[in-house]
Amino acid sequence: MDPQMPPAHPFDDDKLKEECGIFGCVGVADAANFVALGLHALQHRGQEAGGIVSHDPEQGFNSARRFGYVRDNFTSQSLMKTLPGELAIGHVRYSTAGSKGQTQIRDVQPFFGEFSMGGAAIAHNGNITNADALRRELIERGSIFQSSSDSECIIHLMARSLQRNIPSRMEDALRRVEGAFSVIAMTRTKLIGVRDPLGVRPLVLGKIGDGYALASETCALDIIGATFVREIEPGEMVVITAEKGVESSHPFRPQPSKFCIFEHVYFSRPDSIIGGRSVYETRRQIGVELAREAPVEADLVCPVPDSGTPAAIGFAHESGIPYGMGIVRNQYMGRTFIEPTEQIRNMGVRLKLNVNRALIEGKRVILVDDSVVRGTTSRKIKEMILDAGAAEVHFRIASPPTAWPCFYGVDTPQREKLLAATMSEDEMRDHLQVDSLRFISLDGLYRAVGEAEGRNAKCPQYCDACFSGEYPVTPADMIEKGFKMKTAAE
Ligand code: SF4
Image 1: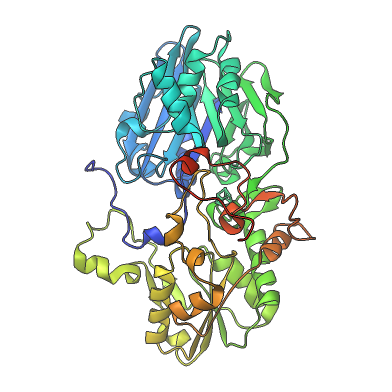
Image 2: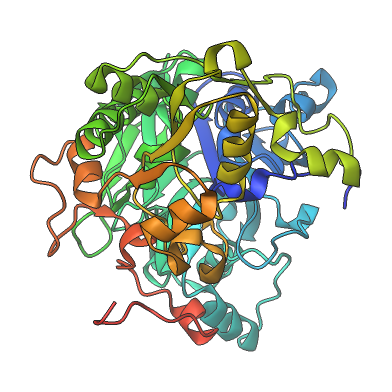
């Protein structure tokens, strides 16, 4: 492991993790500085590494890729001076398919390719579900891969295209790609943004002065003082130049959109706007729905911080049960705190969360969390609450049971490691040894994101595969590796 690379938390493996955040801007002085700020706002989408590529007419393309947090790397003046120009893109990464646990600097994006018509850099959020097959084909035809990342396929496919300009080559390349992609790319003069035809991963457009920005989420526009213009549509490509502004096209066959519903539940920041809705407000509404679907007599509603907080506020409001911060998070628990020794590892969740004993003691407590993945953290939190003297512990979960892995750019344990894949709700309650456990229903979740009729089984408006097992894009590579899709009987 690179010495700069932060050690993972011992309890971090009990959350699904978004694998990337992307940001780019054009038409502003020192664009790389804006990109660094944008990536800092997107750090929740990936903490392992980050990279920035910039272009300046005199100095050409420059790049920097580093392990660790944006704030620890892309704040030094000496580094940022090496990234001049009015056009830059960047990427923060958790990890991508094929390289989990062994990230190398060559896997850190943006990737760069030199073509006959000039250079281009790309930053990809999502996951290509036919990457193995594409990679085999490209290698057989002479491509030499530099990384283990699925995203590099896009650069090689672009190199093989016969189109005369970079945006057309990107179109060609992305037509061969299956799965989820939001891509930000740049040439010497153009900033390019593309979303896959289903629009699984987010991408938004902002305006800053005479320039433009593209970002995974609106919170990254806010930090640089950009105005949110609109979301890039599923299947849309925008080519942005300082002279012509935004030129839009729809190069892919139109399909019903399938935005990731988990972005509403957990991945996106609560201060972002997605689908015209405040993420915070959606999460609060999930708590309201949950209180209607799964009421219980209790004395206190507590969030599991921080991601359970808006849903807990909604639950408390709807149920009339007082809200309280029964669990307090140590905000200064940085990843670089300590190399976790065995003794520290055993302390697990207590490093990060502490129980507010004075509030909890003798109370019947409802704990609201965003999801249950393996269940290991939920069990430890329950023990902490009981140790502090709670009379009862009731879990309410702001997402349906996560019973299927995600293959569209989110790190999920193998199916058999997901608690909900092997146990019913009652079995999970007994396993976690809590007084009650209830998840929001899929219909309730759809209502909370604004679909009044709930989930239309024939045409769900979102990707919800990790709950339903209904994958909108067949995960071809994983099926080849033995993954079994849901059967009619399940
Ligand atoms: S499988 Fe789940 S996490 Fe993955 S894109 Fe679909 S809803 Fe989002």
